[in-house]
Image 1 (cartoon, helix red, strand yellow):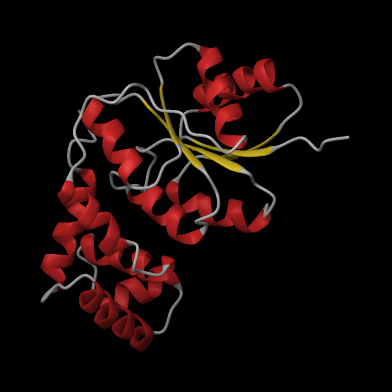
Image 2: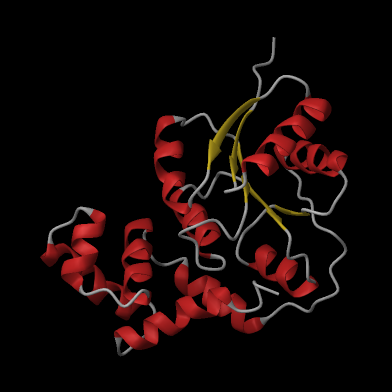
Length: 213
């Protein structure tokens, strides 16, 4: 007998999570759903449930900066497919989500059955995107490639830099030694080919571009 797939639904709206759960059970039958309501809840959810097979991810959860949660997930668990579910279904957003490694995109305005169809397709090794009309961005391709060089921990440090935090504050936030953060910052600037923390912060800002339309 096949085991029920385990899916992480990451969205800060309880009603949306409940609607997604209903749609998935209608379409897929028996499933196991883990819920997360903030970007910071993603890591403990993944740690507690290593059998998660797919993540349904809202881009605008508290603690997220544009595509930051997607980038972090792709770095932390590159084998784990991520399907973005968002109210911003502008073609440019859909294209960016695809370029930064998502396996699918579902608009929150889509019919409920689309959620089940998308998840079934991705669990089966496929992808699920609406017809794309926005051109591929070479700038995004380069940014995705540069960020992919960072370890998940380095990416967390980078988000702290983007928030304007000092090394001491980042260390406290992440439970690291301050000297460890300094080492990470040096590595981050080198990998991203940035000469300053400000330049690195600008790259994070680029993750937010056109994602709040």
